[in-house]
Length: 105
Image (cartoon, rainbow, N blue to C red; front, top):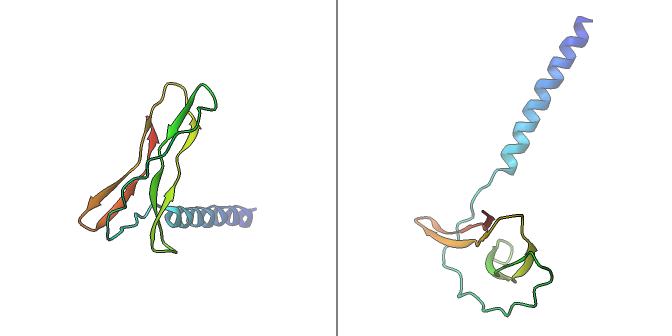
């Protein structure tokens, strides 16, 4: 009986260690880009597909594989109740340019 309790306790400790290791691997690490993004592309919004649709403006994202900015076109998203969309943007820092994600407020 004592052995089973020790095994369960050890199992919980191992599970806790693995969980923390996984969370650390998933942590946000900003990507610093050495030069600013190009000018935004002016997009023509298509017709709003439904009443509570909000236009999320297109933006430049950094491609680590191509080592360049790639355009992500705008799209309509269903707005959460009584929320507004705050657009993402590129911010200049002493280490380079970083992307600040958009969010619902």
